[in-house]
Image (cartoon, rainbow, N blue to C red):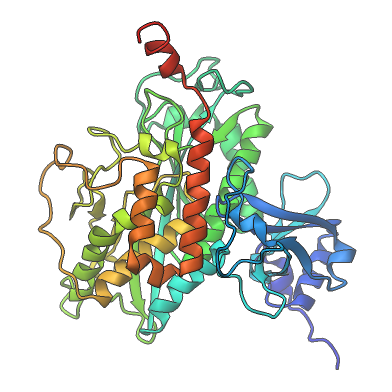
Length: 465
């Protein structure tokens, strides 16, 4: 059977094709030498293999061990012996490319493409532990109701001077003026202009990969920036955040600067968030189900908010996954300490931005920028879905400041993991195996952290106790 001719539009597209044959033609048109076969792990780190393009199109299936999905951020592994659903022999999984994610790697000197892969067992079953599959599982809950969730992430990050010794604190980088940034410069255009060449590269790299930046602004911290992405399908937007983080780091390194997505990288500066705007569309009509025919808020809208209020504390370790994440959640800062909600109120965890009825949405301000985007979006949507499913009713909206209200969220990683493990709704939504593995992984990371003696301990305990 003759192969279908690939359209010129497909060949010129910067991102994504529909089939193996289209991918082969797309790569050939660009004289691609190598293909990066990448897989997001539980930390959002890109795992995978680099393969010559000719070998990639021989149709070989990439193999890697299942343990890539329970490796900690420090490279360690929790003890999962006896846990049902895992291969005790740590055998190979099969990884197949999702050609909708195919794009170039613009910072590489040699023509290189990248494509995100999905994980399967040898019998063809999807790997439920894989972060992309965790998100797909949640999206399916909405699809079963005839709905399509829509998200728009906002990702904050810091630019810092190169730091090769972790014993030393991070510092703001030197801009084009020759001076490091000091003070608060929220929304300052001149502060962004300090790093124009770096941001030019970010925009160029993003355009080359078909990544859509909506806006770029300077946030409150010294050399703290925020990139907002255009709203769309949750899996597509999670892929974009995953690739954006890598893109921003690479662009920064080109300019002898680090870009960091740590939640609280500098002690006296604000933390970095990944706010997630969420709405739900009726798949048949295209109507935003958060607004009725009269333009007023619907029952589903209020129940979605109530679900976030009820279940976010139990899902917290997916939104704030590291010990450092909880340093961001401090009273009297831009980060929320509660799960209250309010209209155009940035002191609460759940903000309802001003909008027209067809754009009514909920902004979840709880997640930190260090979170795996697949897991954070999955957790946030799952909590809202549970609220609708159970017909929950939210508290009254907060008017004025909520910063003096009590903490509603876990104060540390172990508390968050315990809440996750003990939550039956979390186990029902995400599955027993994922909850058990992810909890063990986070506990192992905490144990690794506890083996490090901090400067605070040397400062206050060394000669005083």
